[in-house]
Amino acid sequence: MAADRFFLRNFSAECGEVADSSVAGEARIMSDRHRPEGFTLVEVLLVVTIISILASLTIVSVQYGRKFANVKATQAEIQQLAQAAHSYKNNFGDFPPTFFSDPPLGLSTNGIDEGNESLIAHAGTRRKGGPFHGDFSDNRLANSDGDNLSPKDLARIKQALDWSRGNAALLEYCDMWGNPFVYIHQRDYGSRKKLTYIDSKGQKIDVQAVKSDKTGTYQAPTSFQIWSFGPNGKNENGAGDDIASWRD
Ligand SMILES: [Ca+2]
Ligand SMILES: [Ca+2]
Image (tube, rainbow, N blue to C red; front, side, top):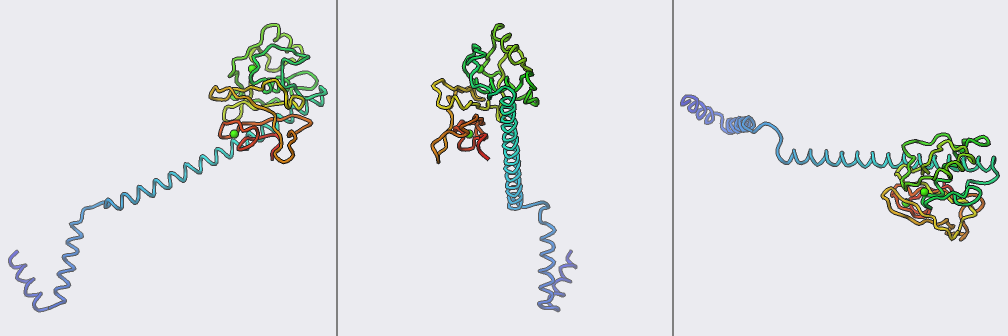
């Protein structure tokens, strides 16, 4: 070691600045060699931040894609329901009623989700060329309001409709967010009868037929209104993010 230091001192003296720079370079190399392996804290934080941003963007993108797909599926479902209602009218002379309790069925129900239940039952009839909607998804049929027909009423609806979903439970058909579609026959626009629904959280919601903001007249004045509460799950009477049969 002493010989090495002697050689280094002599070599430095003879070579002047060149020797100084060589020693400095060697010192830097030695310093680099002694630098701990791996990343600095700043580098780690930077990588974590970038990964967090990318993950957030991916989650937002997936959520948006899912919401878009659910909106499209609900729009398609409303079109199918509307088509079923028109097919029913073509064969029975009128659109499905809003109320089971109206003649000719005159059923005794709990008065909740009734337009929806009626539409589903009438679209599912096997009379006169039905069923007019043969593709209900079982996992979106529910009896969330616990409405069950008496044996007498069940016999009556079976005889009238030969209902393909014919059991005592009056099922609702729900959108992609678990809320029942609203259905109102045009003759019940402005009806004094309450139109009450139960949403996916078990909240009772009173709905009413929708008028156009521009004309002040009812939407779809000669047929019916169907709408979904949309992605936010809140009834906005066909406005906001609601998905409605009269909207593109
Ligand atoms: Ca009901
Ligand atoms: Ca809504």
